[in-house]
Every structure is written in C-alpha cells, then in structure tokens.
Image (cartoon, rainbow, N blue to C red):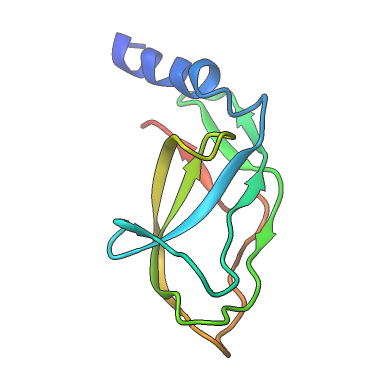
Length: 120
C-alpha cells in the first residue's frame, strides 16, 4: 500500500471517527452547492459500519427517510455527510439519479447499506 491510500484510510478510520459517533446527513441541490432548507427539511443522524478490505470503506448501518416536503426543495443532486457537530462537511456524494423533491412528491430516503464512503 502506498502512503497516500494509507493516509486516506487512516483519515476515514481515525480522524473522521465515523465508526465512533453518528454523522449528520443532508441533501444538496445545484450540483452539490446548496443544502436544502425549509419546508420540513432537516438533517438526520446516521451511523456507519466500517469494512476492512483494501480499500477501507464505510456504509450506513441505519436507513433514513425525510418527511414529505411542504415546499419545493428543488432537484437534489448530492448527499452530504457532516461531522456530528453539524458544522464540518466530511464527504459529499453525487446521487446516481437526481430527484426533484416537492409537495406531493415521493418520499425520499436512504436505505441501510446504500450509502458507501471511502477512498479508492
């Protein structure tokens, strides 16, 4: 293993401390530039499990489902993972298929083990 992947894996395991505390998960629009706000939106706490093959990855051990929007949240393009403090953005992952969340839309959620984080 070269130094760079090793350092990245230690960041995932130690510095970020994903396995030790829950993280906050939020939704982003505008190609990941803007976090959704208003209209019954809020972040959720999410726990992660670590797998140790090479490379080390973390996947969510709990699923979450946002309430139905009461206003137009826009086209959600990314999911963001924040430290438990809710201030520091640790990761941002692009959705495979963007989804427009508005009143009357389908409820949006992330099933357990559907969100995988890591360095490759």
